[in-house]
Image 1: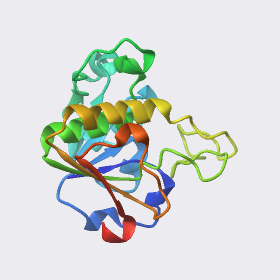
Image 2: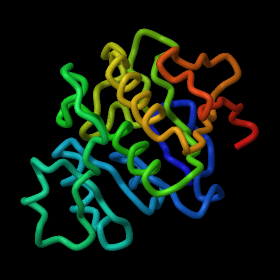
Image 3: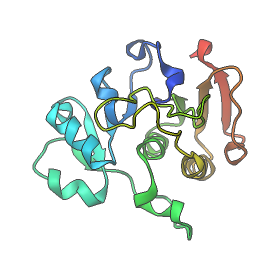
Image 4: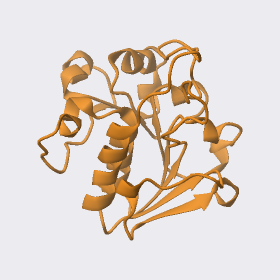
Length: 192
């Protein structure tokens, strides 16, 4: 199973050639078909519904928005968090589409491959393949602080310790300390 984030490291990779089951985030439906689409931002889920993505893919959103789409086919609530924490980043509403996509994958497969989870920008600006498009920041905006994503995805790696996670990244990419578990490895994009 392939989970696709929207980091710029995935630019130029033909996602149609990889894997039978794909989970993607937000605007990926503009370019590729995914079996499961995670949209926790209200604007993003509405864009997916307006594009009829839910006719061919399952679209997942927050419990806060799910009632708005109860009459739509193939729209589900994102998985419940497998733990309770005391910090703000442990609150379900603080989880983004990427961490929820990894959580969904961990519940569906024993081997999960991640692509486009760059976390850090190589510049001071936004690192997102959809920057400067509807619903996304302008390319001149500062990069998003990835601390929440690192913690949240790290919790998935920790709690789903029987699942094997492989992160495909550029050669110089460093695995965050919070992701260093025996079930997590890094490989190069060339080996995807």
